[in-house]
Length: 310
Image 1 (tube, one colour):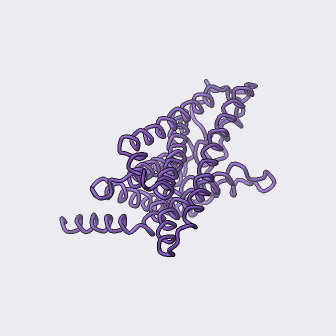
Image 2 (cartoon, rainbow, N blue to C red):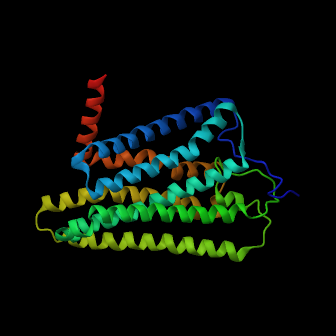
Image 3 (cartoon, rainbow, N blue to C red):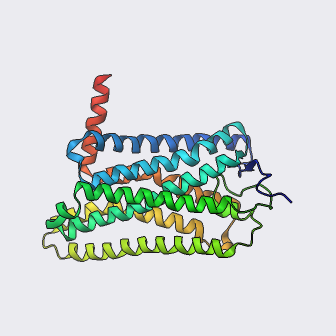
């Protein structure tokens, strides 16, 4: 029997059993992380440098790109290091930091997507009040509230998880430190505290989800009443990227944590975890840039300017 005070490191689940597959996974993760860094970095630079993009929609998109970068930088580097050097170790403090920052960035992304949904709702359903309801100060306060809520949320969960005594070894069934895997090592009987945090998380997540669904119901009702087909198409095109990102985020996260135990296996769990923790941050820039002509033009000008300087 061991407890959390005697644990100095955790053992992460390797991405593959053979050396060749480990190197292949390293290359795949390297490619995905570089794509995420490039895509999100270009969006951040284009919005920051393009004065015509200093609008609420692009301001929130910049914040979303920051959260995507944070998600990638929290989990992928350690997984790449372990695959390249054929190791499984992560220190106790490193695991706690990984849990905190992953929760921080993933919850910030969900809160920001909720705020961005409100931006789309006001833009389409209350266009005459857009400047009043979403002024620069209001946008700054909403973004700050999203980041602050994510910080508080991750701090509470991390503190609760790592305050529990661990007596079931130190091997985690995941390629990064994740709260459900750490709780499996716990021998604590503090079910009331865990249930309280779980209930609060469920209420918060459900509240955001209901708000997004309600907003899009109102948006579609307004869009379908637009007389011209061109007007409907333009309204839909401003919502589709956000709707696609929200659907990808919620569907992958829900399946990862609520899939039936009967279909669970270590390989499937790992594949699903990669799907919800690594793939969305890499795809989000592509989804947003495909249908947004202003963003594509700003990115093209940014890249052209960089090449001309060289």
